[in-house]
Length: 196
Image (tube, rainbow, N blue to C red; front, side):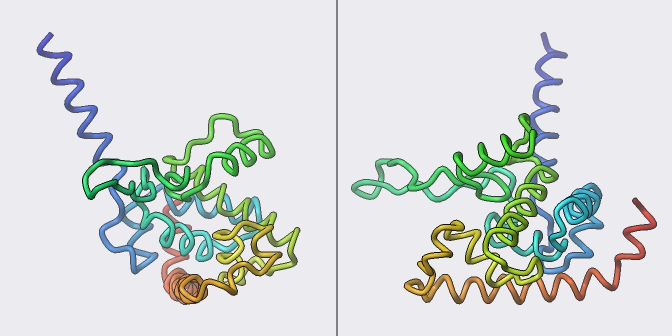
């Protein structure tokens, strides 16, 4: 019994540590050095969907700050009674239930998990690729891809983002982060490729 308890506690602690966000989310090279599987996951998605690694990573940074089980905040009633969340957005990509189900159905990834980084990269790249194909937005245009990611492709088509100055500012921040990530990656890509 004691060994089972020790095993359970060890597994729980290991699971908690495995899903911690990177220590320095401002430097893509440091992220990939710390999270060794992440470079290959984002590279695989870039090759599959044609969406640059820096674009994927900038969107995931904005959506979850690389927290595996991120969720929208739960509002309270009377300041202390928990209420329902306003969205089903969840995980690294903050994908809503219906969009995630659509991704799994269309890609055949029935067991994909929003808490799995490789699945999340693939989802973000897939969504950006479908946005590129549907709306004609370049796969490297992080600003407009993020607006479509946040508002949905229909919302983007209706220009719903024009009524949200805060979202336009956020999309600009995501764009700048992608540019920074891309510049950083150019300095360590050779090293990362040699390790993978």
